[in-house]
Amino acid sequence: MSTTYTLDTSTSRANPTPTPLKRLTVPGIQRRKFEGRTDEPLVMLTAYTARQAQLLDPHCDMLLVGDSLGQVIYGLPSTIPVSLEMMCAHGAAVVRGSYHSVVIVDMPFGSYEASPQQAFESASRILKETGCAAVKLEGGVAMADTISFLARRGIPVMAHIGLTPQAVNALGGYAARGRSQEEYEKILGDGKAIADAGAFSVVLEGVIEPIAIALTETLDIPVIGIGASARCDGQVLVTEDMLGLFERTPRFVKRYADMSGLVSEAVTRYAEEVRGRRFPGVEQVYLPKK
Ligand code: KIV
Image (cartoon, rainbow, N blue to C red; front, side, top):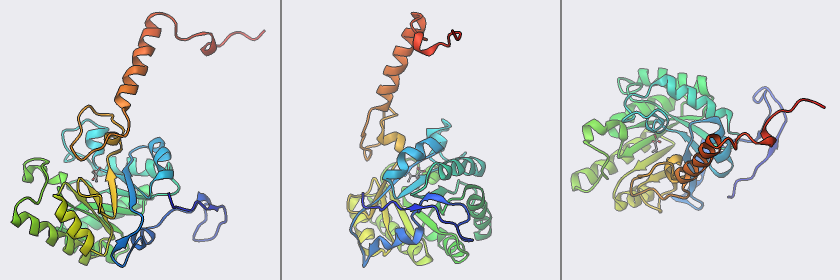
């Protein structure tokens, strides 16, 4: 990890509350892609809670409060029912739990599509209530005017194109995109449109690899891949997927741990000890003072 951690305890009017570390910034993330190349790929993971943010923060450049929390935290069938209130509550928790990464909060379905003005109201609420640095929204050409409206008003926007989960009803599922020539060209057009509109970065999800390579090579903003290509400027995964908290994960997920196995093993032991009256033991009970 190349990031330099700097103790910053000085105050100023611009920084009235000292924080232990200097947080990375949106322009800093953008500068990591220079002359069309990112020497060290950007590391992004999802985070939904303060404790999770604390654990991930030292290793990441960006933490994404994804609307995938609908499925991962709330057990919802898709991201469609996720509300602005949910995103604000979890976004604020992740900002509280992090000092170093740029925190980006997803705009939930229905909070931005109607008009640029609606998007501005939702995005400004997210920024005010969470303290995050940027918002993410799904869509390419159709969202270009909205991205430009927000960017010109000081709201950094990360776009999300390719497989866009909020459009699951229109797409008919979560299959990889870009296999037909028409879809291939549409996704390339989406990438160009959001970059021209002023998005500072883009998540490219679930596309055939040649699209990911073409967009990474042609866009001058960082392309963050998920189910895309190792040649993207950075990668993102849903943390619970890569930690192995679910039995089944999509093909593009690499499981770096077996958390569901660990949880199951620990809870099995706990249940056995409770039922056998071996927990709590002498170390865990309070005795009267002698
Ligand atoms: O909501 C989310 O977690 C996301 C990532 C999968 C990129 O958008």
